[in-house]
Image 1 (cartoon, one colour):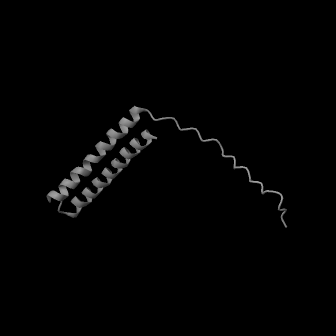
Image 2 (tube, rainbow, N blue to C red):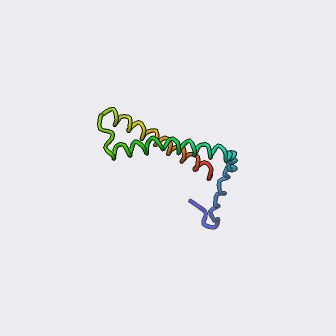
Image 3 (cartoon, rainbow, N blue to C red):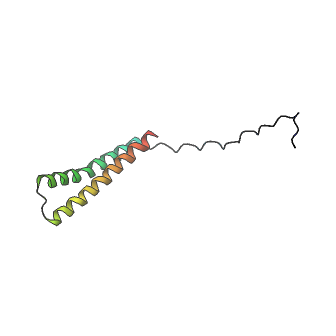
Length: 89
């Protein structure tokens, strides 16, 4: 049984490891280059969307080309997102 006259000893808080150092910041030129490349990669996707909605793309090969162009545009969005995301942190 426990002794009523002694109070329970609270454990010491755990010791946390030191915070990891922040990675070096990316240069502004690389960020700007990534944004420019991303915008250039967006252009084929924008043209493909206009082709599909304007009715120019009617055959299967045209639609495959448009789908590939939209995929390239998605990669462009990812490049822009990566450039701006890493610049803020």
